[in-house]
Structure formats: structure tokens, C-alpha cells
Image (cartoon, rainbow, N blue to C red):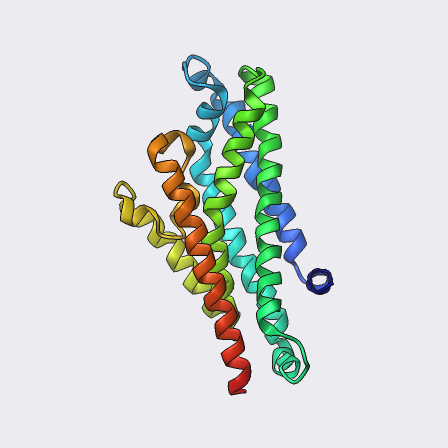
Length: 240
């Protein structure tokens, strides 16, 4: 029920239009790339998905991350507007549970982005490359890997947004973290597990022996960030 309430709060914000428009723009990247540069990729020997991911995933992942940063800021901006969150602190409602529900909304939004982009990849493969029986299992495996690796950054951004009353502060912190992830070298394992760097990693560029490690670290980081967010919100309420 609380998740439904959180969703209803979004009707008067730009959250849903931002996700839909952003998803369309991200989905247009591989379509435009293949439309104008298909001759570059048609002679390559890799699988269709590997070609598409290697050519398009970095800008898609960057746009997805920017959308999640903006979406997290919107989720908590509506709470802080007109001191709404301070008034809610007087009600018998757990802000820790509200935090978890907001994280779930963001995670579902990221999954929706991936589904929209997956449709674009299917169209590209059917039109320009080879759509065989191995394509869909490979696509599902990639989508599962990508959604899990995105969870730490989504959780961390939810924590940041819950702690910042000013939307521009949380937005600035998120953008700084995102571009830091693009600046730091990601070849080494310690730096590659930075939450905002994980969503840029692809299955094809990850050794088979390292995939389980990245998945475990992603789950661990997500758990730590969610726990810290719940604890922070409960402490904040007691200090009001």
C-alpha cells in the first residue's frame, strides 16, 4: 500500500515523463547509430548483442545514470516542498519504510529504461544483424547483469537525496559522482566497483571468473546503502 502511495505522489511531478522521454532518447541511440553507421558493424564477427553493446552502451548507461540522479532528486523534492516532510515526521509513519519504497520505485524505473532499450536492440538486430535463437537468452542474461550492477548507484542516490533538503545539492553530488566514475581508471578491480562506475560494465568486457564477484559486491553495496538510509532516516526523525 505504501508503495502505491509513493507512486501516486509522482502524478504531479515530472518523474514519469522524465523516465519515458529519457527512455525514448536512450533507445534512439542504437537505432540512430545503426541507421547512419551500420556498414561499420556488419562485417564484425562477434554476436549481434556484443556488437550493439560495445558500440552503444557507454552513452546509454550515462543517460540512464543521469535519469536516475534526476529521478531520485524529484522523489525527495516533493517530500521537502512546503516542509511536507517535517509535517510527516509527526505522523506514525516509518520514514525508513518510505525510503525503501522510494528505492524500489527507482529500481523499477531503471528496469523500465532497460526494457525500452532492449526493444531498440531487438529492432536493430532484426533489421541489420542476425536474430537467432540464442539472442533472447543472451539478452535476458545481459539485462539481469545490468540491473543488478545499477542497484548500488540507485541506492546511494536515494540516500543522498533523502539527506539533502535542497534538490540542487543532491543533484550536484550525483553528477559529481557520475563524472568521477568516468574519469577514474576502471581497469583495476577496486576502482571498478565504485557504485557509479558499475552500470558501465558489460558482460562481454568482464572475465567469466569475475562476474560472480561483481554481482556479490553489487548486492553487498546495495544492502549497505539501504541499511544506512533506513538508519539515517530513523535517527533524523528522533532528532526532530
